[in-house]
Image (cartoon, rainbow, N blue to C red):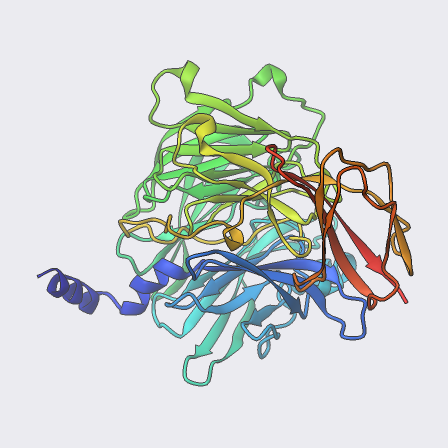
Length: 512
């Protein structure tokens, strides 16, 4: 009987709509380091959630993905497209037909001419399947526009991608089509969720002042459905490009957070697209906010839609939306531990993974990201680990922006997917070497350990070139790299038997 019910349900609603909700976010593409070897391109990596173990692998990209990035997979978790805000690329890591010059315009030509540099911002772009056809996809993207004598502003555009599943080819057939160009958009905060009918999309975007735009994508295309009150005055200097917005996994709530405006929670009706029952929560006491600083912040929900996580540079807070006692509602989970990898790994952008974990990247490019291993658990039982996930190259200061998938599925994520490579996660500590770049020898600066240690040298493909056990107090002063080919390498040292789960790492460049 259960199979019959499922079959009837899928005959009413297209199969592609149901399944695409499940694995649309199963591959994340990132990386922004220019490869200066003769092969060129950019060093990147893929985080793949399709197997029992989430894996991170090296890939070479045609363009860097610094700042804005988005990706989308097919019904089975196979990568279809990804974008850095300047081009659309496919699973072959190539720019698709007519896929260049996304967000082109006078502003880009004046201030951001190199598409290999990605695009500024971090929640201004998103792929959405077209409700009308399984072969069409919208790329919703926001672009800064040059409008003298007025100050630069944003406009919302879309580009349209047609995908041929038989030939596995794709092309951008419409590009940079404006559908909202008033001079009042905030940077970031672009997010989307399925309509109650499980076909169409709601897209929300706050604006300067006290409003939130609500767009509908259906068979007729994109339309502005309504302009709703935000119950908060959003300021260009403090609100724009400083935070994020996310729908809860069960689709009933919408949350927006930045350091200055604090946390705003709304009930959301997926049938009408309406927001209601606004709540403002001061995550950080008003008297403690430094009005002269500029902190980047982000928000994400736990898979069970109970907890909200709010990160803002130095602090990660958990907000229990089920808790009625205001003194127990907000818990400080952790503060920034000071790690540089190689730059400060301040707490920044969060994205919920298909494995039920929440991943967080620092706001500066680094070679590790933070992870909340059990976000459904209250307080510090959520197990937040800073610098817990190693990656082969820089994440490019952001993670992909996805709509909220699996809203109508009983299982919002798959907790059976284990940690990266199944390895225990470690806290990264800086390791200083000089000179860097180097030709023959690199020296360790002021580094020693009282215990034995394992030294690993990796290339940018993640392959271990050297593995050596070093006795206690016998760490070398220098490392001979003369036989290595020119390129970029990761060097890591793990104390043996450490209960603190720390390792020491750096990246260096070998030159001819």
